[in-house]
Length: 414
Image (tube, rainbow, N blue to C red; front, side):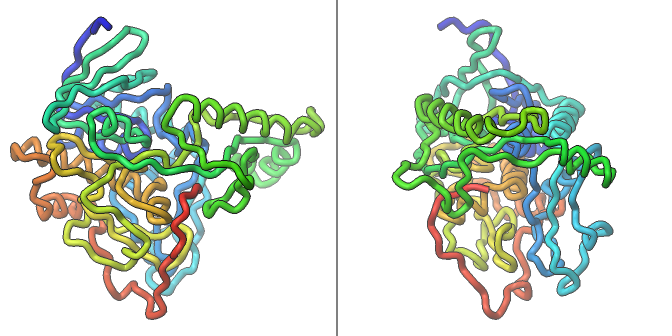
């Protein structure tokens, strides 16, 4: 292996999904030189090229917005040049407690959001390496010296002071020897489909958002209902698993449409990446569990809501992003330390953005103070995030008297 060039940055962000973009934005706004490494040719990850074009609910279902900060900024960016489905009650801001049962969410154009994210990073001076894969990490005594990358130029050495693993699969953590945990994925795969009938509805309503809808091959839901009996969960952390998953689902998708009138419909877009949600994550200093609903953490970096159930609130501890003994790497998004249904709650788009924002702020603080990423002053980090409109701790008055905890420990999808 011959290294053809070396690139240097203050912060290297691995993965261009929404968590990685958020981390890069945060670090760049703090004046750091940032490089972002993305294995595909577009930004946004599952939120764009994965065709999961939905900002899931960001409120408690009672009119109070919980997820704010950069997640709210990205929501607005996603619909700036796109259709949206923001509920009417939220058009003019937060309704207030008890004033709405509608939940703050929205669909958007996945390709347009990807373009907007590219402009956002480019305007901030972030160096984007598209079509670039990470093949290894040079780490010694818990300190990453550099990453080895590969693209059309050949092998590249990427040196940085701090690293953010937002790959969704904990690839950097794995290469660097950080302890990780492997999950599993239900059988689900969706593409975009348009029909003559959907075209008619889009024209009738003057709403391009009605043009396409989801067409499923594997169609297991969040809790595993619909997963074929006897089929193992998809691993997603090795090449054979990824290839088998894609072949199986693409053939099932073709089989599902082959008897349709070919002049009445078209598959308009296939996902550009495997639609895995829970493959591999950090074995962090703390692992978030469903039992942690309604709990406060002294080291919380954000409050989030359960997107599938009203009222249920969580806080994400900083300890879910780090591992002691590894001084210059932090994770975000789908790789945070959570298990069972709590992993599902923490990995969707809005929380992924907030943990990315927290990771970006943390690496800057560590650099500025000459501190290991595991040892930064949490109160300083929390203060910075609060100033950026992140809710760190939810108010206890939002906890219902008949509070519910979701007991399922399934790995799932949305």
